[in-house]
Image (cartoon, rainbow, N blue to C red; front, side, top):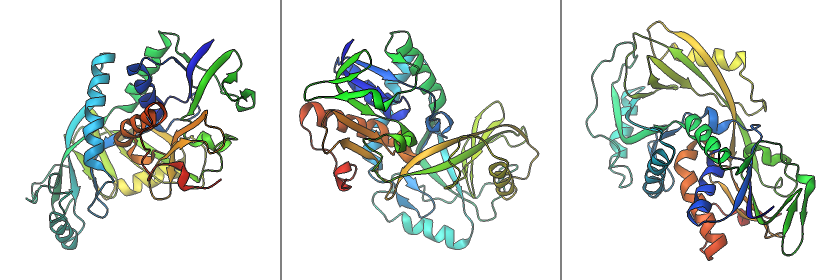
Length: 347
């Protein structure tokens, strides 16, 4: 079998790069073994504002200009609905928190997103003594539905193999990559934290942060916005809400833990005061990088080897932009963004 590209991993990063290949009519095969679940359990929220410090997300405006049409095109292509628009309401913790919000309104990159009027309305079940600040131009991509639908799309076209990728069976020469029965020109690794076991790119400083979410049923809550407080409470329909998320830097498993559950339940006591039941708990490993910039680029010694990784908690915003930049870098000589280029780390 001869293809132009092998893609290893089909989370948000791999999916976005495959879309670039399809648009350019490039041939490819994807390997996916379900070992990395961060895209499947992610909250999927796109938000141009870092609400902890009231600062703009890196390149937020430019990323959203690429990402929102990207997801709309996928909705049409796959005949699914994955983009849900809503307002984020930041529950202020103090008067100082309110004052910081007003100070942030003077920042040019934030004025389009932060509502200058404080929301003093009360919402049944929501605990907020100092009112809310509304963030506009936000929403959620249903990443689980997207990734599962896209995998089925590729499966129906025999473009994906659901099996573990064995790095030791990869053979390189000056012209071609050979992997089992496949010959290819390039291979792009989109393995999430699985890259730590990749002998070609495991030198990159990827951190693994385990995140856990609860799904709760709370009929009395009845909110249609994302509530951001000590944690987030995200409505997903039928009186169900995703609640999260934890950050655990030591547990490298994707298994939900009792400790994660207890942490979320304790925090939730300070956010809502209505009855609820826990429907489910999920966990995944976020591939993150110091400085919150992805790991993107071509191997310094083997130009057939490429990496697209480390999208972190804002993967839904970042993935389409960096995938497009990487593809154009490989195929058209476009300069790769210095802030994501793996050249910033020497091997």
